[in-house]
Length: 313
Image 1 (tube, rainbow, N blue to C red):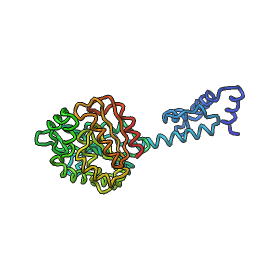
Image 2 (tube, rainbow, N blue to C red):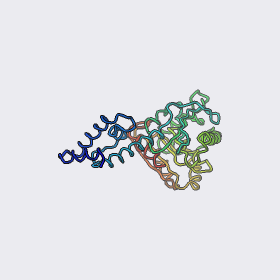
Image 3 (cartoon, helix red, strand yellow):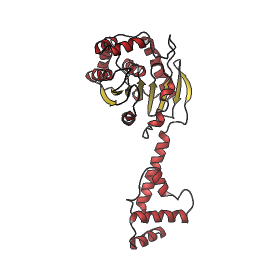
Image 4 (cartoon, helix red, strand yellow):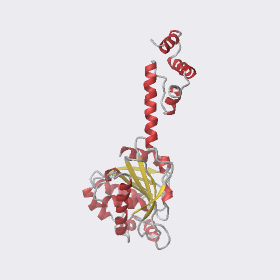
C-alpha cells in the first residue's frame, strides 16, 4: 500500500464523505507535490466540465482526470484558428477559417445586399467540439444597382410577389433568374478550390449553407453538383426554379437539409420555407425543419438545432 492509499484509508475510517475526502486528497497532493505535471487534478476535471464527486478510489480519480485531459485536447483540436485569412477562390474574395485536416467544410453564402462578414461569428457561436471544422465565407459581387448578389435578384419583383399572395410567389419561383447559370459554374469551381485548400476533403464532407438569397443559392448548387454534399442549410430562404429542383432531386435521394425560418418574416414569407420543405421531402430529401418567432433573421432559437444538425453530419 502506498503512502497515498494509507492516507485515504485513514480518512475513510474517520467517516469523511467520499466527495469531501477527494477534495482533501487533491489539496494534499497540491501541497506535497507542486510539480505542474502531477497536481491540480480537480481543476483539470472541472475545466473539462466533468465532476469527481462519484470517484471513491484514487484510481477512479486518475481515470476521470485522464478523461478530462482527453476532452480538453479534443476541444483544442476542434477549435478553429484564432482569426480568418483572406483568400481568393474562383474569383470570389473569401474569409477562411481552416484547421489542418478538417472533418467538415462549411461554406456559408450571405444574403442579398450583405457581406461575407455577416455570419463570420458563427464558428464562435456554434463550436462543434467533436469535429475539426473549416469555414469559408465568400463575398458575392456587386450587381448593376450596387447591391451584392449571387445572381440577379429583382428585389422589387420579389416584394410585389410576396405582397401579392401565394399565387404570385408560386409563379416567380418557377422562373430562372438571370445570372443563375453563371453562378452555378463559378460556385461549383469555388467548392472545388475550397476542397483543395482543405487537403482535398471529399464533397461528401462539404456543407453548403446560406441566408436568404444565399440559402436559395446553396440549395440550388447542392442539386447541381455531380457528387452529393454532406448537407445543406437554408436560413430564411425560399425555393427557386422548383421544376428544375424536382428533377434534380431524383438523383439526390437522402440529401440532408436543415431549414429555418421566422414566422414573422416580412421579406420572404414564412410559407415559402414550408413549400421548400414539402418539395424537398417529396423528392426524397431528409429535411430538418425549424421555425422561430423572429423575422428575416437567424433567430436565437436556431443556434442549438443548427449545431446539432452540423454535428450529425
